[in-house]
Length: 89
Image (cartoon, rainbow, N blue to C red; front, side, top):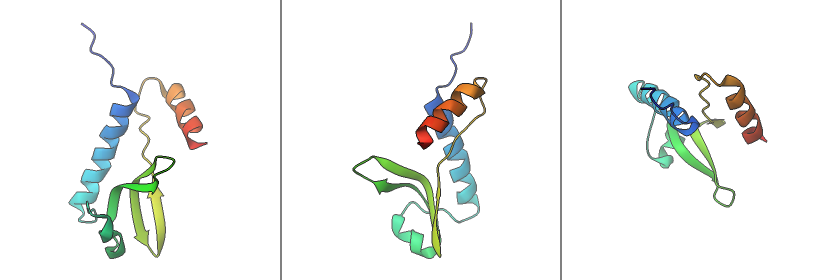
């Protein structure tokens, strides 16, 4: 029996939660967007509701630092790289 491969979205969520866990362990993560002004990292911050843009992680430390997570730990690296390139446009 061959196990089913995880979808790209599931892999992305996995790396998201790994990073979030690290931020929590270091005490720099908050689930409240108001804590941006306390130099905390918040997740799933809306950038544009009209376009459906959301930052995976956002930090405000003098200026905004936005992060989108990509997980290339897969057998199909080239396909994922192509999807990421198209998404970046």
